[in-house]
Amino acid sequence: MNESEAITKALKNRRSIRAFRPDPVPEGVLNDVLETALLAPSWGNVQPYRVAVASGETAKEIATDLTDRFNCAAQIQRAGILAKLGALMKGGVKPDGDYNTVMKYPPELGARYRETGVGLYGVLGIERGDKQARHNQMARNFSFFDAPTALFIFCEKSLGAYGPLDTGIFIQSLALAAEERGLGTCIQAALATWSSPVKARFDIPENYRLLCGVSIGYPADHKVNSFAPQRRPLGELLLKPKT
Image (cartoon, rainbow, N blue to C red):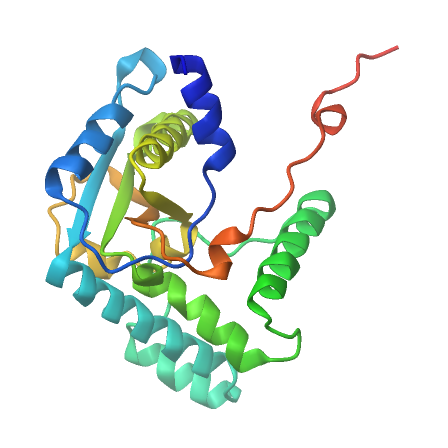
């Protein structure tokens, strides 16, 4: 297999892993993945990204903090207005991330987003009306789907759209490098909903903002990892010339 075939294989096999084995990722393997990702191109080679690596007790502490916030926020959403106001005044519940991770999708993208959700819950056997099961599955985002390590990706804020563009290329390179080494990843905007648990444990440069998290580890033998949503056909991707 030549290098181009290896890249194609990694692209075809990579998917979002939502169940990990507890086995820790050796530091040497993780560093190798990150060093490979550093080969990614960036605008003027500025490389406007930094990574906080959370493993071991640090990962467990951040997962606990994030899960507690998510559960509390969900409980508030179900409460009356007075209870909501009282809870928000206590602090620690309202999202404090650098970016808004909850967005309204335009119709075309929203349809694809909903289709993916239906497919995922279908694989898991979660019924549409089973709110508790849906909550429990969503909560697993914040414990990194049991991955032993979470990477928190920070992006320099001064470059407008081009900082996140470069950072996205770095993240894709990281995911492919991980796939090549038998590791799985899940790239998660949800992990940037609350940034304070991460910022409390890492020295973050002043101009860097938390863009997303990446759960990384060895995939578990679980049916959820078989889920692979469909990509749009090429004809839908290409823009038509004006006539």
